[in-house]
Image (cartoon, rainbow, N blue to C red; front, side, top):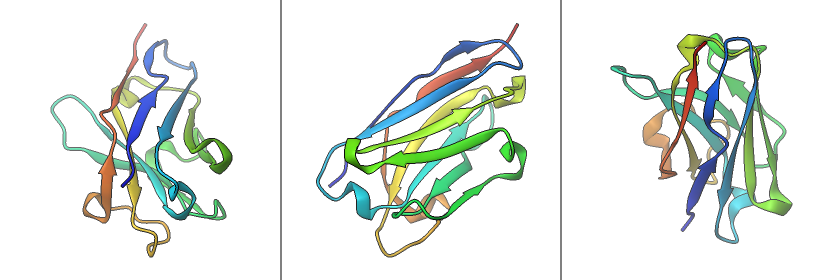
Length: 125
């Protein structure tokens, strides 16, 4: 069982930066690929980024490539999403999620069994 708690959301101006954190409970955190998803107002939840269990592989949705970076610190049971050059279209509730250990870099919601409650990111001037 993995429990996830996101933090770090807030209001930021276009072009600004935020770093989201996701703290996980449980002794098996390092075995799980970890992902970030987001749900913008009026839209379905979408994949944003994923990092493999050993941190060696990452993947991103095209709209955030070059701006967002996912990383993990297994000693702290935490996964991060560094978001730079934020745009208004990045406004959403951001969720972290943990996938099953036998997957590498899953991108689909159904491949994730554990979800946090979400943190709001608003990009506005």
